[in-house]
Length: 438
View 1 (spheres, rainbow, N blue to C red):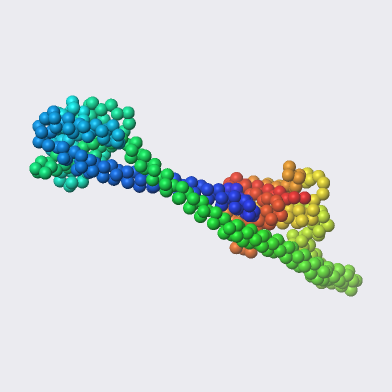
View 2 (view 1 turned 60 degrees about the vertical axis):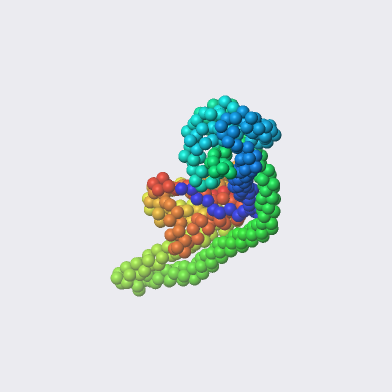
């Protein structure tokens, strides 16, 4: 697992992100809308093809579908050819057929088909019942199309042709799909710019709101960082006050008591009573042990050497308890040049929190703290242990216990222009790396 603190996003960066997402959304919506417009326009063009078929069948073909034509009379065929050839030469239709319900072609502008019989598809025969035109793409491999050598896909339209004498026929014509596509392109060209301009206008109208929200978020982040920094500074101030009170109060009092008892136990009158001397010895030892414990606590609460600029000494004091407990502790200071007091404080806080985690959770055999120069010109501090590692739950438990935790320290490091990174996994130890400006 790799954890990092949250980084404040600049207003410009937020707007760029908004613009990128907006453009992506605009493209997606435009493609979907364009596809929908295209589909709708294609449907409209297919309806136009049906209307054209109804018009041609009723106004052109039906009046000339005479009994002579159905009987194959050459004069009737020639009369039909005269108008059909003109339509084929000047219009989108390139093939006409008239069928009987049994599949016999009684007329076609391709005369070689006249009189031939083929099997009609069920949906074509269904048009005689429903009176609804059937529109479909032409199967150029079908037997009735053996004389067609079209170089493009065609659309075929079937519809019932009812003559005045009650004869029922089936009208069919083939229409180039280029005509349908042209209609679809025309509708698409008309509506697409409107859709795209509307989407662009919507995106532009959202930019002021995005700018306002980005500023609000940025300001909230700034205020949060100020509060976090103030909390840490207040914590340091309170630690310093407590350390000062303990040092000037309880520690001094215990030291005074220890000196007074030590003077009493050396009094000749007192030394004549071994039992009293033994009791006083125990009291002095206990007082001195308490003083040592309090001084150790003072160092942990607020190390005086940190205030004096001795960062190495303060970090060494943090590692000292590990050696006392049998954990191998190593400290290396490879920093060259000066480091600001703010960097000192940030490094010490982070090291203290990381080592507290090592002590509480890691069960490590080895722990090390490394200080060195960073390639960015700042300072890098690493706390490394070979313990059992952890997951994000540990951080949540820390905060629940009232500690600042490394997450807060990571945010403060970000606010100070640095970066805190934690690399860990169960059973793989933990590496806490802090990089801060000098």
